[in-house]
Figure 1 (cartoon, rainbow, N blue to C red):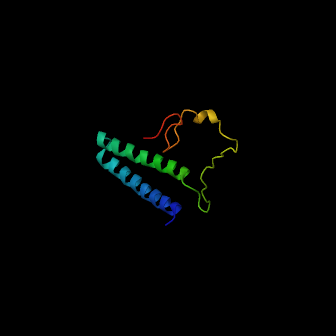
Figure 2 (figure 1 turned 60 degrees about the vertical axis):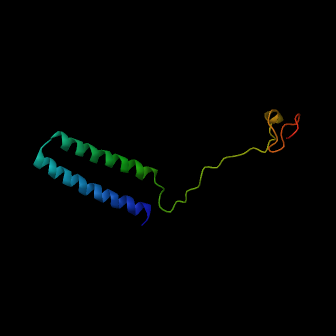
Figure 3 (figure 1 turned 135 degrees about the vertical axis):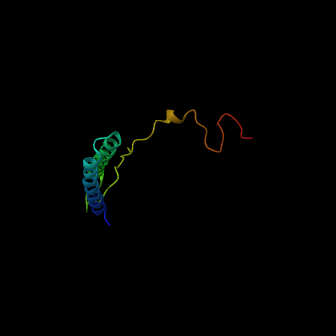
Length: 95
């Protein structure tokens, strides 16, 4: 299944959940537990909406963000206090 089809399937399941929660609310009343279930179902609906917005659109290839690296030479002062890897410092002898 594609992402779009999976999201649609989850949406249908959430609609079923909301209908069932509504029936339970009518039968059991507005107890604390029922309010918590209603709140959790609402939270799921909001989360699915956010996920749907963030999901890639069907047929649209996702490219990673490109990072431009300049061709300018680095400032040699950045490397003045570093050791050559594996060679030791220029003013000391390797063991």
